[in-house]
Image 1 (cartoon, rainbow, N blue to C red):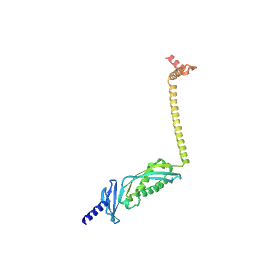
Image 2: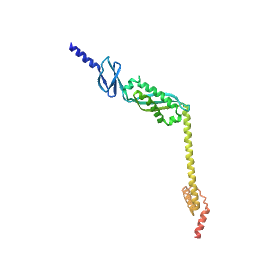
Image 3: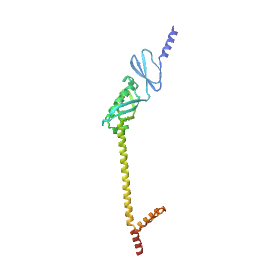
Length: 246
């Protein structure tokens, strides 16, 4: 008789063993009431009177589907993001919310629409990191009560209507042309200033014009097909005149 009782007890113990992996934590209930959190390893969970739910505490990535939103300047767009979070408090994650992943995803969707609706399109496109940080802070403020720690929020894509894409492309092209014209005009102004300084130096220096003329003749004479009509400038004659007076 005792032999059968011992065998039954051993079978009961073996059937009650539950394994909690290193990346998991267990929530143990007895008669439906929370008892304690269970660390990794083999644990005894007595049938009927006890139950245990294992929670994965690894970092999870939630892909938030495209959300239709309207920016502050009344431009329609679609935004897609990914959220990285982990369970920081296993007890709260199991007892305070029914489905953590679904709750985080739903909260992220509404938060994305609200935050993007407070920004203009230019702010949304040029300050994606700031927008993602605002979304993260808003989500983290709500999920803290669920025992969820939000690591980061990354905006994956911002989809715009085709007409708006063409408008932005035209604006960017006009901006590039504007910069090109400014750079060209600045170059022409610098060249004009240099030519003016060179002209003043040639006009005030004795023999400078003569040397410049000889240098020009040397450059032109390198091509034998050129016909040169040589005109002696007055500055050259005056230079010779001054040399004779000395």
